[in-house]
Length: 185
Length: 433
Image (cartoon, rainbow over the protein chains, first blue to last red):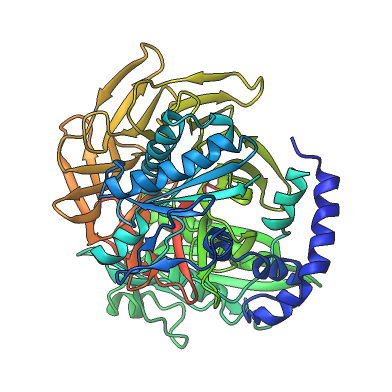
C-alpha cells in the first residue's frame, strides 16, 4: 500500500512543475478550482512517451501509418497482429530477436510490453486479448534468454488506440504490442 | 525512487466532486404502443421555486415521459382541479403538487396522485386519491426529491418501483490537442444532470461498478499498471483493492458487499478470482489457458456469469459456487460477452454479435431463447437499472461514444447524447434510498 502523505507531497511538487502546462492547455471545460487536475492532464503525453523517446530517434512509418521497426537495439518497437490473433509475423520475429539479444547482454535493461486491440468487442475481453499479445512477444524474448524480471506487461485492450476510426486500416494499426524501454543500461 | 518517478509522471488526482459543463441529455426515441395518459400539473407555489433552470413538476414530467411508459398530456393551469376537463383531454391520472418555503432553506412539498376513473369514499372532485405524500427538503435536494416523486408515481401506476432517483457512473474520454487522451471517471444523476468528476487521468480508466450506493470500484492504468481501486463518491478518498502484477480487471462486488470477483493473470492467463474483502483470502475460480473475464454475480450471490473463449469464440458461462460447476449458457451468435442478470426474471443481458453487428440481447435461461434488444453495430457495456426495467449501454456515434437506454422488453428506446467527449462504460447505481 502506498503511503498517502508521500503521494500528496509528490503531487504537490509535480503540480508546481506542471502549472505552465495547465495554463497553456486552455481547457474551457475545467473549472478554475480545478488547476491541479488540468496540470496533470497537460503533463503526460502518452504517445511522446511511447514513441517519441525512441532510442534511435525519429519513428519511421510506412504508407499505411505502420511503424517500421528499427533493426537496432535498444529501440522502442511496435509489433502488429491479425484480428483476434496473437501470433507474431516473420518480420517482427527478426526485430524481436534483435531486442532480445540486447536484453540478454544488458541484464539491467528493462522493457514494458503494452498490448492493444482494435475497437471491436467488449472492453475487458480486449484486455485479455491484449495480454495474450504481450505473452506472445514475451515468450519469444524469454526463449532467447531474456529474464522474466526484465519484462513488465500491461494490456490496455482497446482503451489506447493509436489511430481513430471505424475501418480495417485503422483497426490494423491498433492491434499491436508496443515494446518500450524503461531502462536501457 | 521508481515509485516516486512513476507517481510524478503518471499523476492522478483525487477530487471532491466538481461540476462541469459536459452533461448528458436524454431524449426518447421510441416508447410503448399504449402509454398511460397522465397530466402533471405545475405545482402551486407561493413563491416560485426554481431548480436550476427548471421546476419540480417539469423534472417529474421529463422522467415520466422518458420512461416511455406514459404519455404526458399538456397541463392547463386554468382548469386545475377539474376532473371533467382532464378526462376530456384523455387523461387517466393527474399529479397535483404544492411547494411552500417553510424556513430559509427548507421547503415543504406535498403531492396527490388522482385516478380519474375510480371513485371511492375519499373522493375529490369525483376522483380517487391513490397516492398522497408530504416531504420536507433543503433547496439543493429539490431535484433529487423530484426523482423520488417520479419513482413513487411510476410504482403506483406500473406496479414496478421506479429508478429515476438513481445515478450513473461512466468514463468520459476527451482527446486533447496534442493527440493524447484525458480519461475521467464521472457520476451523474440518471437523467444526466449533476455530472461530477471523481478522477482525471492521462491513462485509461475502465470498468466502473458500484460497490454500494456511495462507493465505486474501477480499474485505473496510472503508472502503466492496471490497479483496482475503491473510491468514496462524497469524499473522493480511495484505496487500492488489487494491484497484483499483470492484469487486475473486471471488478464485480458480490450482492452482500463482502467479496470482489475480478480477473488476475497469476497463472499467466486471465482467470476469474474471488477476493474476500475482509480477510483478503483469494480464491481462483477458473483454470486453463482460455481468456476468462467479466465476472458478474447472480442476485443471490450463489453463482457467477463470465465471458470465456474456451470454446473458440467469446461466450457466456456460469459458475456455481456450491458444486464448482461451469456451464456454457450461450450458443446463438459468434460473440457474446459482458453478461449480467436481469433482476426478477430468469434472463441475462449481454453484448451479442450475430454476423458483424454488435448489439444488446436478452437470453431467457430456461428456454435459451435470445431476444435482440438493440443492434446498432457497436453496442457494448450493458448495465441494468436496479428495478430491472431499463438497460443503459454505450455505442459509437460517429467518432464519439454515447449512452443509450433500452427497456428490458425492447419497446422503449432513449438516447443520451453527450455534449463533449466520448462516454463509455455506464454503470447504473443501486437504489439510493
